[in-house]
Image (cartoon, rainbow, N blue to C red; front, side):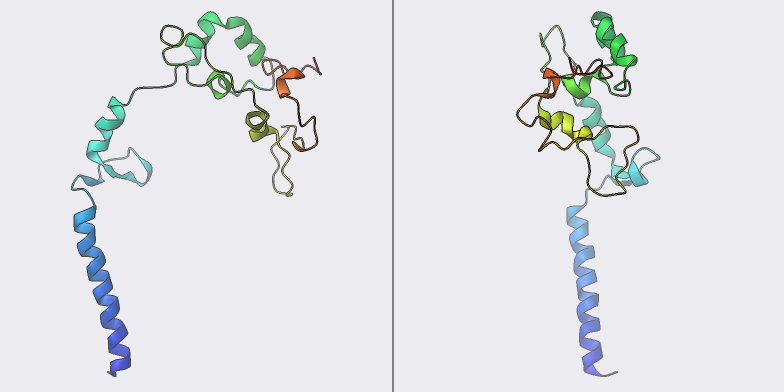
Length: 156
């Protein structure tokens, strides 16, 4: 074989060997296939306990309904029925004992995450009404005109 073929071949072999050696130092010993738990089943076994020890930030919808049944009822009858309370009100763990009130994200940007009209044809979102955020009452907060708990109503 000619040297012009062998040199790149040796460089490729050396590169693969270097990657395999570096992998021995970088990848943790407990990384691998540990069952059908995570995407592609590859994960660090010690990471499972780390996630179990991580404090939960969200709570159940049942807990929200205990005190806010009226709003939850309105929401269930509306087009926002698929949304969970904590999508707009933020994580509810610790409410009302440690966190007295939950901050409501009432910014236009938050509403436009779902309601901004997308300009390309394959962006159908079902019956979700889309608006042009740059033109539609651009200096006004959405909930000044729309009740998020009952979005079926016309302007308030």
